[in-house]
Length: 280
Image 1 (cartoon, rainbow, N blue to C red):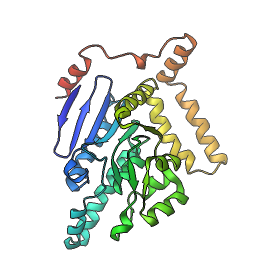
Image 2 (image 1 turned 120 degrees about the vertical axis):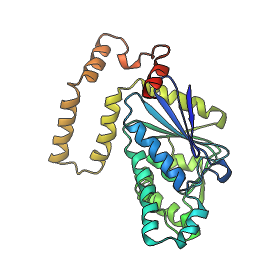
Image 3 (image 1 turned 30 degrees about the horizontal axis):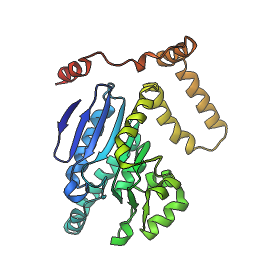
């Protein structure tokens, strides 16, 4: 396990290409300020371009996953110029979009309180595993603002009908309700959260890395298209192109030969350390 420490985002990695980014402002329940936004954005950018990374976990330090945007900073923004406010908002919006479009599978490991923008982070991740004690709230309206930047991701996760209720009421809901409306995939006891996340990473590790990237591109394309000639053509082209790739041929060959594909082979001892040293 290699580990680097930032001020507001901790980054750790294992020998199998899994990276964990831990939001690290536990004293304010990991509310994100401009510095945290910039750190998380920089981390996501570096991960996007690193072919050795297979999956990403987003977690929170301390008692909570994420309390959303920092209230103190938002209050201070009343004294900012319009240009400053637009810049800060654009940086946060870009962070959510980077997380949503990252070319690696992302897993949110959720515990404790999840508020406002924290729900946005959960929604932008591909998979969410939550402790049964986690609670959720799209609380922006309670302080006179709106969940604007996170709305595309939250609505994509839970649909317009549930979004209308929880974005308008700002009420708290528990993990069972989060699971019912589609915000959360798996519920576990908090002491089993790390184990379940590890099991999910194992599932992702057994999947073709390039195939998972293609799936992440395919889903929004198919979800936002009418079922007509255009999407029929594009999906046919998609499978025709990918099944001729080396990864697909390896996967098909492994299936027919009743063996595991090469991408599931464990890295040789010291490989991760050598790669890390080479990058430095």
